[in-house]
Length: 585
Image (cartoon, rainbow, N blue to C red):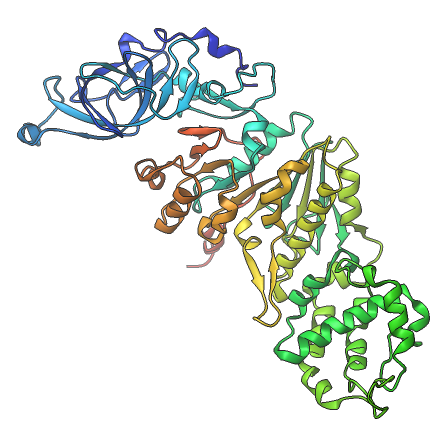
C-alpha cells in the first residue's frame, strides 16, 4: 500500500529544500514564467541523490522556488544559453561549470511554508535572487495527499498506481475519491500504455471492497482471475471463455429510441408507421383481448371507439418508451398500420379505412431491415433462441448485492453490423443509470469503466426524420455522480469524445498524445493544463502519464507501475508466423 495521509507532516519547508539539489537563483520574473541562472546546467550529466537521479536543470524537471512568503512549484520548460555564449559549446564540448545557462520555469502553484499544503495559482511572486531547488522525488510522490484541501487525514484507502521516476523509489498513491469521485478519463495514443494503466487501477481497486463494472470491448482484460471477480459475455467472445458466463440482453431492456436506432426507418412514412406499430403492440401487450390470434392489433375496417377507450385507460403506460412489447411482431403490426385513416362513414368516421397499399409499399424496405436485424448474428444475444442464458440485467442486479468486486462484461463477440455494439452498450449504460436514479448505488457506489470509449460515446444514428442519440454514458458523466455511479473512460481518440463529456471528467490520466487535435481537446476540457504543459504530452514514455484535473491542478508526471495481470492486447507475431519451415528454402 502507499503512504498514509499523515506522512506529509514528516516534511518541512526546509526539509524539502535540500542544499544538494540547489539549481541556481532567480534572474527574471514575469506573470507566468520565472527565469533562473542555472549553475550546473553545463555539467556533463545529472546527479544522484537519495536513490534518485536529478537533472540539476533539465527540461521537464519539477523545481521549488524559495520565496519570501511561501514556496513556489514550477517546471522547467526551456534551457538555453545567451546568444553571446552559444558558440562556447563546440564539437569537442565535454562539460563545464562555467556556462551562463538560463532556465525558463513555468509556475504551477504555491506551497504553504507551515503546512506544505499545495494550491494552484501564485500567492506571491518570487524576487530577484531567490534560490531555486530540484523538487525531491519523495515530495513529488506526496503531492496527491498534499493537495487535499479538506485536510482529511483519516482516509487510509490509497491506490498505489505508480512512481515519480523509473527508479520506483517514490511511490505515488491516490485515494479512490480523488481518482473516481468526479469521474476519470484515461487517454493516450496506441502503444502509450493506456491498457496497462487501466489494469493497474483495477488491480489496486479490487484490493478493497470496490464495485467496478468493466465493459471490455476487445476481451483484453480476460486474464483477471479471483474469487471476487465475475466474467460475463454477450455473444461468443473472441477469446477462450472458460471462466466466463454467457448472457442474453432481453428485448425488454430496450426502449423505443433503441429500436428506431436499430431499424433506421427512412423518409416521412416509415418513421411514423414504426412508432405507431410500437404503440399498438404495447397496447395489445397490456390489453390482450384486443389482439387477434397472431398477437397483433388489426385496424383495417375496424371500429375506433373500443381501441380509443382502451388507450385512454392506460395512456400513461402506453406512452412510456420503456414499456415492453413483442418486437418480433413488428413486421406484422406495421402491415396493420398501413390503412387509410377513415372509411366512407360521414364527417366523423367511426372506423378505419381499408388497407393502404401505397403506404405498405413505402414500408417494404423497413420490413426487410427489421427481419434482417431480428435474425442477424450481431443481435444473437438479444433476439436469439437460447433462452437458457442468464440475463445480463439480472447479473447486474446480483452484482450490487454480493461481495463481487469486479464484474467484467465482454463485448468482443458482438459484431459491428447494424450498430449492434454501440446500441447494446448504450442499453447497458442506461440500465445502470436507471438503477442509480432508483437509489441502488447510494450505499454501494459503482464505477463503470468503459474501454475503447470512443466507440460508444457521442454516437448518433439515423437521419433528420428519425434521429436517435446514444447518450447513456454522457448522462452518467453529467448526473451519475450524485447517485453513486461514476464513470472511467479509456480511449485512444479523445477527439471522438464530445468536449462536454470530457469537461465532466474531474481527473485526466494522459499518456502520450501525438495528435494535435487530441491535445487541443484535452487543453479545452481541462483548464488546468496550458500549451506549455501539453507540449510534454507527445514525448511521454510508454507507461508515463500526466495527471491533471480538479483535484490535481498541478500537473504531475509519473511512471505507472506494471500491472500483475497484463492486458492481452498484443498483435500478431510476424516473426513466428511468417517464418518458413526448416525444410523449405
